[in-house]
Image 1: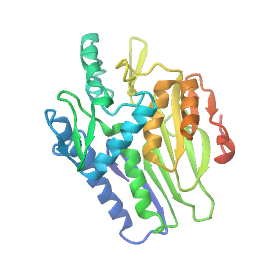
Image 2: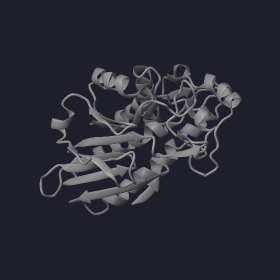
Image 3: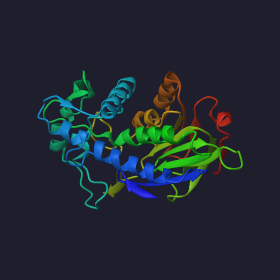
Length: 300
């Protein structure tokens, strides 16, 4: 168990060679140094403080941004990688319950525009001065994908748990698929509302219960609507997506929360993605064929 990307990371390996776990932790540390918004000298930090000038970054950083822009475009910008100026105005973790004034929020909104993020040749990135990127909604998925690829064929099976991102590699020692619980948005941290069975797939969940505070009877959570700068007020409490690409699932799960149930179901169908959505009232809805494909067991 380790702590990276502001998340408790849990790795379970079956039939692994000696030293593989140390290799995984080294990869996690390298990616954190590369992609963290808060580490001085990281690629993201250099992009955000370049004053509008082009920055040459690691090719992996460039690829993550490329894919982030694709999801932003396909989702109608319900997922935004340039949302950092808005998220900086909120505090969901330190107990201050800080939220922006209307003036602060309105001033930050024009700085959230993925269309202005330019990916150039030779892995260059250009961002207008004052704008910032935050890979918090996609980086964990990318890292899970890369580590899964690096250990596939070297272990009998494994689970890589990056908080809401779980990647099941191979199969369990008894030759059965891995069973992954989907959290009950209205329950405790380890309280599952359903279970799916997967092998060589990622199960990614975004939920409004992850980081939040309540003020004057209103719950404000960390999944902001890029259009308003306020916590999404859609009818969804969580969105779970199953895919070979944890990176894509990571970004799309966030977008689905902002979209709400009906639009999210249409979006996932258009993109050929499998998903399970839980409304604020506790209703479970899935994309076509989901229950049979993943042996869905409803616990409540």
